[in-house]
Length: 245
Image 1 (cartoon, rainbow, N blue to C red):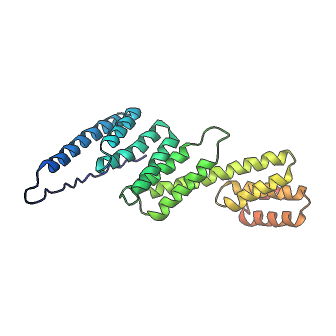
Image 2: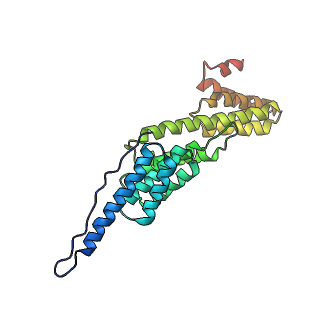
Image 3: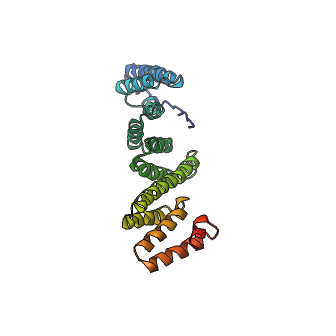
């Protein structure tokens, strides 16, 4: 994953004219310098791959100096560090927090990207939960719509395509699971979902075939014929079209 660094611009308040003391100005300078030191400590831990220490350092920084560019960047880096640790839910939550606190930050597109890849990262095992994938798709869709020229938009689009493939394949597997158990209504419903919701998925061709077979078993001749016609039209040379006979 590409990392982006935030250009930090410190805006210092000028001392008021007349008899105002320099102490407020000195305090701002001292706070800024202290925040910079704490930030660099966390960044050093992050750069050497010690993400747990980095998260703690960033949290300490935000607790001590909750406002200013170092605190904002620490929040973003916290999400990234959680992601690198594989703590997907914490990473997505940290990115969401940044988005809500700083919706007009020039790097908020990166926060959306971090949120999306963290949700995507939640998929585990053969019986994975599809909910994080739907969430990731919605997050990436927001990113590419709002910031189509973002440095992260191209990767977000590729991940959206992959999500469609994964969800389509999952529903196809469920369709076939029902079909081999003679549960043809459930099989037809699940395959119809692949056909309608995941039209760009490679699973669509096979889903049309099993939808056709399910309709045949249910003695729904007209629906079976219509499905076969759609399969032939869209995949004239496909192997499942050849199986229609």
